[in-house]
Length: 255
Length: 293
Ligand SMILES: Nc1ncnc2c1ncn2[C@@H]1O[C@H](COP(=O)(O)OP(=O)(O)O)[C@@H](O)[C@H]1O
Ligand SMILES: [Mg+2]
Image (cartoon, rainbow over all chains, first blue to last red; front, top):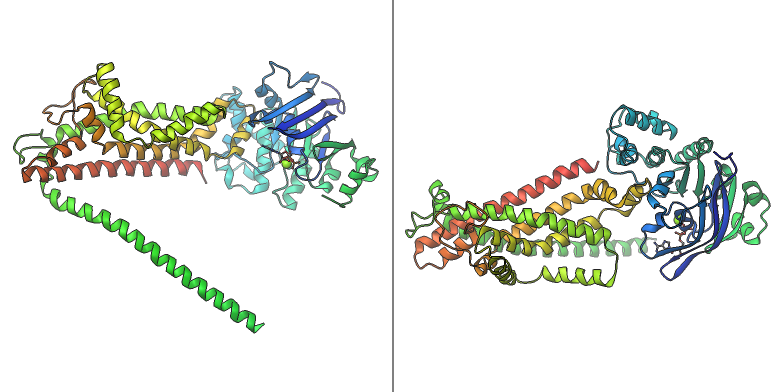
């Protein structure tokens, strides 16, 4: 296993189109292992498009085309013969709107392990418990594992979705604006959780909340109109941005 | 200030009138629709209820109206609908899954789509002609239960495909993404996430389609299903009759006694239809309870 901070994702000249419309232009950056990388920028600038290239979930969108290289641990995710399924097994994802399955809390977490071959029984019970603990939601749900997950509050649902992603033991976690539908308390809980998780997982988080990026991330990338304007240590981006546009954005002059 | 309030009040009052007017119109329309239906039902009921008896549902047709019964027609209808469902439901749902989840949005996928929509509007007698040529003659199934069921299956297939696609499409994309993000394959996602959610809708649409088919006489008449059957079908290739044909036959006889029989048979058909719709409602409720909170 590489040491923390080494390159996990190495992205070279990534371009992405929806039909004829180009959404990403020549993105190159490297995302460090077991660190939190934040992606900021105004809406529509391509943050989601970018993060969805990292686990090839964009493959599912008709008309979406990707060019360039995405290396994960030196392996090209877009090389012919690579199964998108196995990529998504190693690289989990959490979405903007919490999307628990309309099943019980237990079955939500168990779904991933089940489709990857774990049988129902004590081993699965242990995975469910451990995942819920890692996502800091075990204490709230341990007495109602058979209840429908959609009855949980938004913040709990989102932590459940994180637990669901962790249940297949991924190496990296992609989060696309995971807190945008949550209140400040739920947001604080998720941030705390991410800081704990980064010891084990490479985390990439899209956020439109700059305070959040400053609070949790180690490195930050600023996107604008499909281009990566600036990428560097979070401290440097927020105190001493090199690009004028970055400075304008973080000081709130546009966005 | 007070002027504004007065103006506001006038607007509110006017809206309230508009609201009430609309409601009265809507209720009137509803009464017309229900009234027509009720008149029909009462008419049939008055004519046929007296004839309904154990003798009627357990006897074979006869030349004497008071001895005739609808047994072969009832059993024929039940057999035929069961077979129709067995043929049409799996094929229809599988086609819908293919078109909705697998087929790429190419020009020929669109051609297929438009054609299915058109097929749903084709008069049922045309399906009868197709069944006559294909099943009765080309495949030599003769005027059998099998020919009738296959013809009916063709008739309901487009409706099942369309309503199943509708149900599949209503499953939110965010759930599919949630499944794919865990590394699920397309089929796993469909089987574990999409189908359970779409199932109540698929079921309702399909049962409605079968309800339509159960009252169809013309395709069966076209393939030459017999009207006088004094035995029960004992194999797929047996000749058979069904309620709509029996009704059609009785109505076209001159004797008044047969008209009463027709009304009674209509009541039997209505009861079967009601039972099917009740089953649809029950199944939908049951599955929805399990799937939502
Ligand atoms: N499924 C899609 N089909 C077509 N265009 C899309 C799709 N998703 C995003 N886009 C376009 O790509 C651009 C980038 O969108 P997105 O990556 O969602 O931005 P962000 O997440 O930064 O708000 C936008 O102009 C958006 O309209
Ligand atoms: Mg976005």
